[in-house]
Image: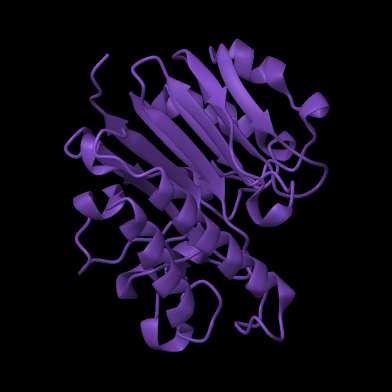
Length: 265
């Protein structure tokens, strides 16, 4: 199974990019974040023509939104009302073999890394705390889970272009890194991307629009993640970040992350 996770930053604005992704990589499963469209206006026909018979979508106008498309049968399952808000940041589906796939778009958190001064940052921390509690309650040695998405945290020193300069910048602050560590510990999640690229090497999935030449300056962050529970350890066989997609005309500021799995039927 080839899986792609991608913050597409408006699915309707980048349908040609979706078609390019499918033509280039032929993924079996596509998890999108920040789709920015209501369910009734989602361009489902495009995905159906591309061969994605099964899907789950949760969207709203202009903001947020998650969607999962699959060539394999999936069943949409229930998810919590995170922080008491129906702001379309999580979609859970289950494959026929029992594997659960959780597609997340964690709040970005605004610009000021202080929950007392910034409600958006407070929301982000609360959201992450609820993720920790929810997965801790559901923890089991038998749980076969994949967690993907734009988690809006770059936890490791080499997940950002400058650890020193970004310590006080939202996405790499110590409190966010601590909260992410707690989520990972909640179910002993395994960082699949870092299985393939050691922590000593730089690894990014997001580059700001502000950079005129994002490739040359390479001031990136790894905000997009793929995790698995211990029950799926060793099932991942390859990983890549699609830099070509980031270089297309009018791209998302995120690049798709691609992971191949060898899962039991």
